Length: 480
Image (cartoon, rainbow, N blue to C red):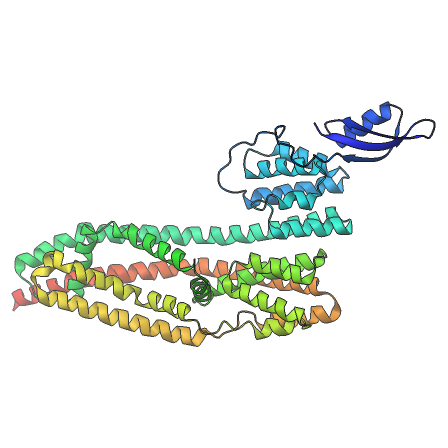
């Protein structure tokens, strides 16, 4: 139970200073008034340095991290309680009691104990960085300094809810294409493993001369039958490789530049980052956070090395007396990066390299008995890898120096700086890009179905043609 230090006046007007133990500040004041004193000042007695945490409440074990939707709900509820005039400690204890066991509940227990020890809300939250981010803590700090904590909490709740809504929208849109792709792969794998070998036996029986397409189909069929586990190992290996490359500074920069320039998907990623960063910066500026601190926080929340470099250079220019709009425009060109080119080359060459692995393992299958068939596979895979690489390099050279921040953002920021309404302009930019992200997501979802139908049609068509070309040759020979 915390100890409160208080100053009060008795019935004769004499000043009284004392300490009292109580579960909360409200109950402490009630007890002091019942003693016939009029409270003039009260505060929690800070624990002496070196005291142990023997009285600390036991924390339930929690895995993972606090979910964003739970933090959104907590922030909205806290803003409502503060708007109603409840003391901050009482508000936090109410919300902590309502939380299910997890990271957020543990963090709120820590925050309550820190506040009881005399810390401010921002100081207490800063000691739980895995739950309350730097953005969150700085906005709370600005609200405390300006005496408008309930207003800042409302803005913060709006900001978090918008971000969570956009994230759910994008994730929801990706569920359908992912399911369709998985089902398509399973169907095609079934055809390759169960149907194609039956036709292969027929071709061997009649000793037919097989065209290149049929050789490729049979090779893929035998490859999948013998090395089916590669369907899982190849994506896993690519994921681990990208993770390892992104551990290095140049690898992360190259991959992030690659991601924002991929056709269709890159535009969605880029606009999503712009919407998030401009809304973050606008929220921080409107809350009274200094511009350099706001830029540093925005840089950390961008999640992309290209944008982190951009905001770092903008902050450096502001320290030298520049406005935001000029360095924002000058530093928005990604420039050439060898690692980005490597990721593009890997993407373009991947289909050909996959066929090359089929050719390399053909010697372990029935095709190894015919060197001509193996040579045909090498030729097809080499042509595929070469053409894919050339196309990817040309595409990168056309796109690598396109700006990631267009004139709309630069002009709106420029106007906002001139009129003193920077936060309002940043909100408008964020709203614009939020709408573009929704439009792109809906368009991508609508486009995915016909693309998958065309893909399946081409795949099934290739299988049918490859299987019937030798049969047509056989029927023609028998008829002759």
